[in-house]
Image 1 (tube, one colour):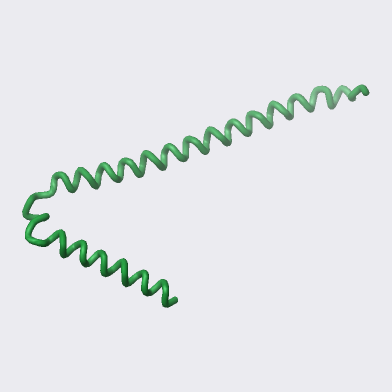
Image 2 (cartoon, rainbow, N blue to C red):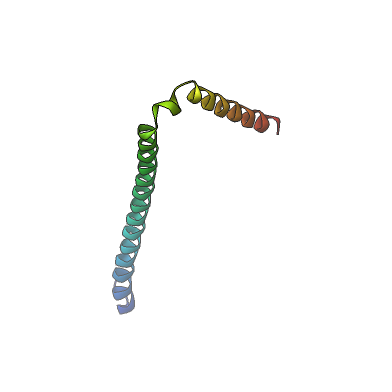
Length: 85
């Protein structure tokens, strides 16, 4: 079976175009995942740096325990509100 000259030129071009679009989509997805990972990693590093630079007075005397207790109560309160809704 012989194909028309239009199909002989059009089919390979469309296959190459489809491959380029697929490769571009894959590359952009990988780049977006890498950027999100780097952003999360930077946030964790920044939080660690802040905690490392904190003075001993801030973390002593139960101030950290009070802050964690308050945070825990707030999170528990939000959970109860979500369950009640």
